[in-house]
Image (cartoon, rainbow, N blue to C red; front, side):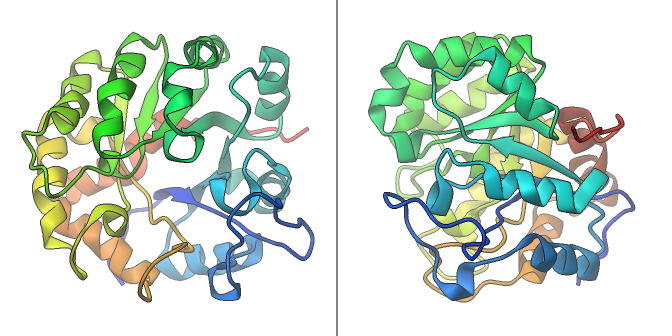
Length: 282
């Protein structure tokens, strides 16, 4: 297993416990091998030496039902923070209630919501409410979607995290307009990128060499102070078996310098997700 520094953070995992929190009828239902509870997650993190974690409420299984994630936050305690899924018209009062339970941001899944969410006037209003609440917005989009998403990010008043390197189209090249739009967002100084999810956009087998040019371009544009890492455990909807160790080793491949890995694993996620502050669960 790749050694990690003390206080390391995995910023992208999901939890599923269908026996206690049934899946939504209109969502993808993870198969048994894809289910991972809070206890399963704690065992994986402990084995890898990862002290802290950000739980991302998944589109699969739960959609905007955050109950399983909130329960896991309570069980994992101070080592965990949460990213909720909410309707675009979510109120500031609801965001404040989530914050009291350890939620530090909201994820907008443009892949799950479709193109309508990009054009919806409620989206910039939600971004403004998140900024007012001091929360982070994580965004998942892919390929050409970023032509429409990038202006939303550029005009957002708060901090934004781009999931899975933006899931670029590896056949379009790093000079493609959509990926170039992602790289230009580095100029805002309010955007960070997750070095995660290679299997989400690669067209070849591990170790996904066709993704390297995209990660390297992001690393050059954003620099180590605005890069974070996430495993994407428990690896939903993968065409092949994946494990935590290789996911962590991929970070060492992308950031060979220990100082850069420490920045991405410790310093930047501490600052972005509030691990330096005491967390009180209501």
